[in-house]
Amino acid sequence: MRHLINILDLSVGEIDELIARADDIMARPDAYSEVCRGKILATLFFEPSTRTRLSFESAMLSLGGSVLGFSEAASSSAAKGESVSDTLEVVSSYCDIIAMRHPKEGAPLVGCAHSSVPVINAGDGGHYHPTQTLTDLLTIRRETGRFDGLTIGLCGDLKFGRTVHSLIAAMSRYKGVRFVLISPDELKLPSFIKQEYIKERGIEYSQCSSLDEVMGEVDILYMTRVQRERFFNEEDYLRLKDSYILDAEKMKAAKRDMIVMHPLPRVNEISTAVDSDPRACYFRQAKYGRYIRMALIMKMLGVDRAKGE
Image 1 (cartoon, rainbow, N blue to C red):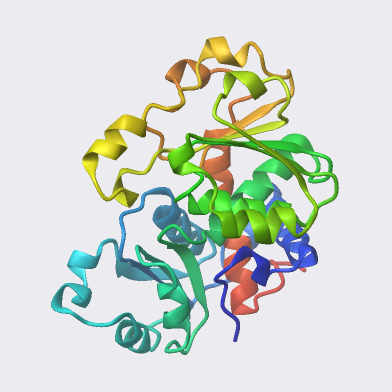
Image 2: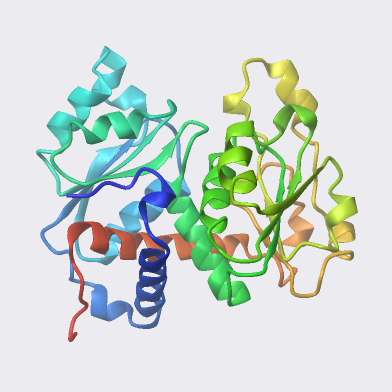
């Protein structure tokens, strides 16, 4: 039995296999419509989610499986004081695989020790979000055709942004990658992320507080929301929430083949006027999340072939 807590739990080869499987699912959806019949996914979401939870559920249903679970802590026994370990001990006896989101860093890892089925980390606080990173990697491969030699601009909340932390960890394994870190001082990338995944691997990077200065040099612009739920006080959130707003005017300075990504939800950081720009791929990115999660569920359950294979 295997769990997925950090994107680095998967090798580069395994990520390539998952991307290839997701590509095949998109090309031949009918061949996968029954491969997980009789299997049950439990979605244990102690924190609100739209795309991650629903894409997991859609993925399992599209594979012919079933889904059970809860969408907020208040609707579970956590509201009565039940521990994560007890919840996982019980729920793992009702299902074949678990996708778990929790506001506290490390909670899914704790849960793994008490689960009798595979656990997938669907986001733990400001720590990691491996399935969003798989979604991001599938998006990058389909939209740019490569991983090597890319300059990736990461903009907004780099301090609490678990999607940013996971993407840096994943992309640090490819050749010629360069990071441009764009944030206000209060939301800079944590030093441990920078040290472990950038400095120790000798990866080129730069830091700045101006998006305008770097628009013309990035191949990928990864925008993030300033996350209200991670702040300790409303005043700091209100001061920083509109630090960066990508609009049509800023897009004029970008490369013709640059792509804009966003893990969503967005608030004000991308103008709706950008949505019609062909370089804006965040809604395609969200769609890809369903297919890569289908591939991952198959892998975690040991289902390695489609109909007719």
